[in-house]
Length: 288
Image (cartoon, rainbow, N blue to C red; front, side):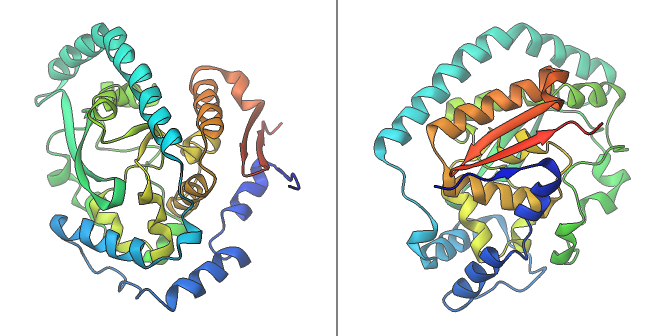
């Protein structure tokens, strides 16, 4: 297969919704799957049936079936990483729990509903980094009734989020808020590597072909996080998740994990980041 080099500047073009390949897929799916009206809200108990119905209507060729060996190996790897990881991180988890409760009133663990495999809604665990009354103080930040076209300019995280506590800012910057995610991996709700677990309120904005990302378990890290971290728009992150599902392999999982570790722990990751995907190499070089 021909190998193409993608620079960081070219990544946005590769993930662009309007690319010819994506347009063909969308045209094919529009003939068999009805597009859900923009901004039509879904109740929690409606999400899984809706996602399953759409996935069943998609062309099977668009969702490669992974072997049982790969699925079992991936689950075993998740447990080998998550169980010891949770044990080693226990002192840090305990200390952070005390600090979070000391800084602001409320629980240390934040529980949130997310959408995972086949549209199943599950409880996602993270350290609380925001004020408990953030929804009342900043209701506009919880309004998901925007037009779906805005996904191309919106981001999941804000650079300066007024909802975060002072300690929460530090915890988020160091990604320590994600340590409780290991519980989700052990429970089987998530995997170490996989698409971003989505907010239920965001499903209304997904096109049918985008829902392919829910054919696999969500992950603690993903292709988008390892290539662009918080620099990609919501639209670009969804495209990266779909790309991951299409090219999913154990080799790709290991490369994403390695790249994520480099990205979060070393400035050297800014100089050269690369990951193979279906015979193509994504490379992000530091801009001088």
